[in-house]
Image 1 (cartoon, rainbow, N blue to C red):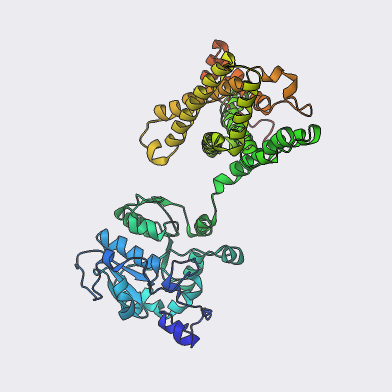
Image 2: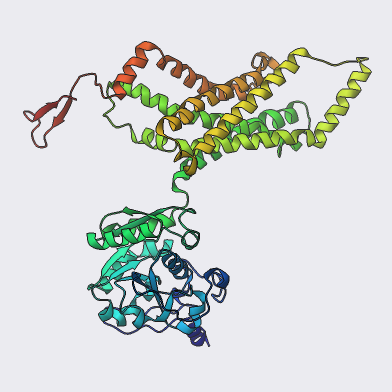
Length: 526
């Protein structure tokens, strides 16, 4: 029964051949799903609907003058690839083990036939099967000789660690008479269907044959994508590892943000919940889900925004000290500079959460009780009007500055999107991200100072001798603003501008020839 089900899914037994091992039997064929991903359900429900592909199930003829491309495989990715190729003007022939069963899943202009017939005429063949099923194609070795095989598969994390050889290199070892090209593995089936406007436009290509890379690059351009040459086939392992990475550039910024959140939350919990419970026997644990979180969020957002502009200050200080821009920054500073975009977006995320949490504060039941108690105290004190002019002005200015700072952060976040950033020239992008970003930092500082007002100097706000949280968050931004102000001084600003335009303190760059440390010194004036 298992074998019969395996056969019905479009799989076939491995063809014995020298150098080709028997592939392990799986539920369903490798050709019936996206290469490198596990099947999540039966393939009777195609990824591409019949209405979209307008298929009548026939093996339709295509114009003879269209460039012919072959596809080995009938899974989701193969179907999406066929749809994109047909829409780009290519003549597509699909090789399947059961063409009658799978023909209705492909566009009507795609010819679905047996594998032997599919590889006979096209010069470019897309191999859309799993690595373990490569050996089942060994019977086609004579027909594939001299052709270009495009490997689109991706390994799982376990397979990537288990095999030293990439999928593309393994395919090349099985078919030495063919030219193997690694391409399209970083493009999803959905991006192929919807077009390059969704997802990444870049198609990473690597091969040992420049002519084959040029051919696939032209095909990628015809399909609306942007080819990117990644070098020889030895780079295929690195290319195959790209889809396995989960937000690689976000790991450090996310851990940083979470670490700051935990630290500030713990600090605020000790001050606002633990201290009243120990000193006054007041139960304020109800503040933990909302109030303590809302006190923590702006602290994290403010510090993260400061960390976006701190590495620029450090880089400028290093350049002034060294008197040149041609020396590399330390690795930690270099990585920090590269992660500024992610840190800034996380700052905006926490600031938005702070705004939403603040809107929820008046909805709390505890807030209503506080209002009632305040009204009762006012009546008992025979006060007809309770109005504190200073507090009113403080809150008005505080909220206004907060809204302005959030608006600036929103602008920074929007211009960080590739679609918006690509529409701006460098001067516009730099103005928004640098100048307006620094304005956002100043507004956030004024927002925090207005919130604090005179609280930093009142003894009752030092709980457990711990200063208010906002005083801690002000330290770093104030240093950055002060340093930025110093760099604007004419003496420093002129020197920094000259350095960034190529001027050097010594007026020369010295190079040492390898192996000669005494007489091998040359000077090159820049």
